[in-house]
Image 1 (cartoon, rainbow, N blue to C red):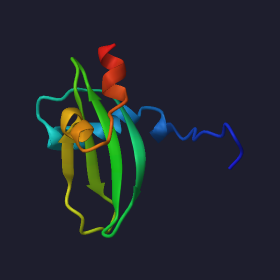
Image 2: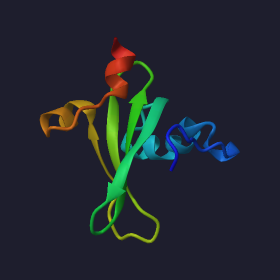
Image 3: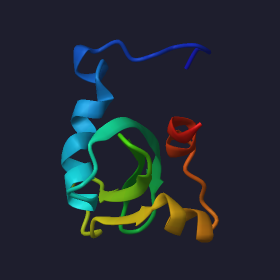
Image 4: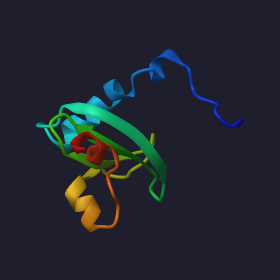
Length: 95
């Protein structure tokens, strides 16, 4: 893809809205402030997202890719940091 290319489909204009269902499954107390796709893969395949919550904190969420048998799983940013994966969005919201 050419450098700087971005997806301009209307459905991608507000990614936070699409992450609300995942955030609700990770924590009923998380109101999504920001979020991003981190990548995917594995066997069974997953899609990994970072979700930052209003008021601080956040989650790394592994969601099953379409058709995958992978379970939905999540780690708080503190748990993720202990496992060697840093949350960058939640840290930005704190500072």
